[in-house]
Image 1 (cartoon, rainbow, N blue to C red):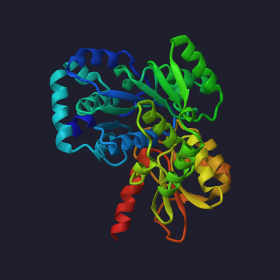
Image 2: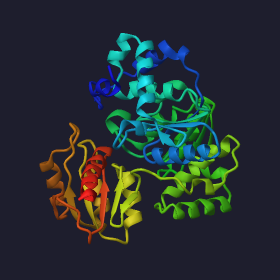
Image 3: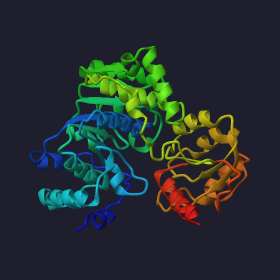
Amino acid sequence: MKLKKFLDKKPLYYKEIDYKRMPKAWDSIREHFDLPIIIHIVGTNAKGSTGRFLAHFLYKCNIKVGHYSSPHILKFNERIWIDGKDIKDDVLEKNHQKLLSILSQEFIKSLSYFEYTTLLGMLCFQKCQYLILEAGLGGEKDATSVFGSDLTLVTPISLDHEELLGDSVEKISTTKLKAIRKFAILGKQEDKIIYKVAKTVARKNNLEIFRYDHFFCFEGIEEAKETIKKLNLADFFVDNLLLGMAGAKFFGFDIKFEKMLDLKLFGRCQKINHNITIDVGHNVAAAAALFEHFKNEKIILIYNSYADKNYEKILKIFLPIIKKIELLPILSERVEQKEILGEIIKKLNIPFSDFKKINENEKYLVFGSFSLIEEFLKYYGEYKQK
């Protein structure tokens, strides 16, 4: 069975996860794999940009490098990036058929979408020297954690997916930090309790955990700021860049920020037109970072939300900069009912309507899940062709 048809049969979202399944599946086929050096990225926000900063830098250093991320926006191939490019369809299909040949029928049937595609990615990355491996929504029990790691990078941790990870930042950070095998570098954390948890986890498990700024003097931080400015990215990306480069420094690479100047980040505070910015952030911490970026402007927010997100708090954060909300439908069983979301928007006294079209005289922020960005980009592609 071809990959697309195969994956279409697997649900994308599970309310409960069998955490024993992935380790068993991996143990059953691990003899077929020769793993590269693995840099595991865990956290709530900024995993995608931090991983791509590091992967791009290593690629520019002539290192054969892979970057595994999720979810994708427009095409599955985005999840498996090797040496500067998304994987080609024929290579993806060849590895899918190989994986089907070595997995038992039990695991072919039972593995989740994310578990199966994680194993598929590992097959595709066999010839890489380094692999930047982005965790899904978990940490210790995430499907990506079964492979072990040579270094873990910890991006900002905040409340998200509480139904699976815990109802406090302390619980969530404990779960995520337990993914560390030996060495880790902590990115900038807004909640100071995370530093305390890191010390406890390090002491208990005999780990070495560094802070990202341990690797940079003042001059390096200023270079990072200048690089982000040249890339026309929001200021909050500076910390993500520094965390990624700290990972490179850990392995002995000499940091040259000019190697980053041709990098492009898809869907991360990306300006796709003079008046349209898209961002796949969909939680409170992401909203807070974007508010800082737009705080002196007034925007129309193109929006929708999954039911399990704290959309009321997100909209309260954006409240001072919103002129109006325009709701864009998304096809997902997880999406909040339009009537319920509308009641919250009314309560906040924000004008809203359905999204119809772009007004070239208005400024837009398209903010929400990968599904929302995908739907908007489909519309935008047709809009640009008119």
